[in-house]
Image (cartoon, rainbow, N blue to C red; front, side, top):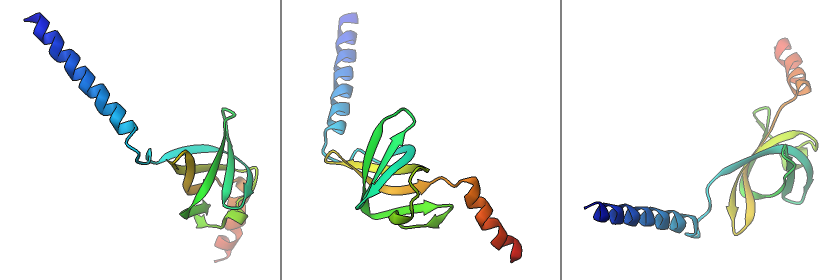
Amino acid sequence: MPYKSGLIQAALGAFGALAFVISQWSGKTEGKRQACGVVEKIEDRRIYIKEQNGKKREFELGSEAAIFLNDKRISLAEVPVGRTAMVQFETRKRQNVAKLVDVFPTHEDTEAASPGEAGA
């Protein structure tokens, strides 16, 4: 009986591995992922990020991509170079397509918002 048990376990393991491989190679998007780093440059509808580990990434903005700074929607031209940003993206046909760009606020951003709020 131990022989049959080993065969069943091996078959189940092979089936699980095959299911995993098929799910990775199915041709669908890989799902949403995130990258965080410093904005190096912006041109056309592309944003270039350098992550903390030194990896450089290029993202094309999707047709419905949203860009935020301090919870306020901004345009790509308003994204400050040199600032830290988080990009949520999908990979389609080996192209990183940004769905959301969230620029991290700095102390100056919060100070600029404070006088207007204090006077209200």
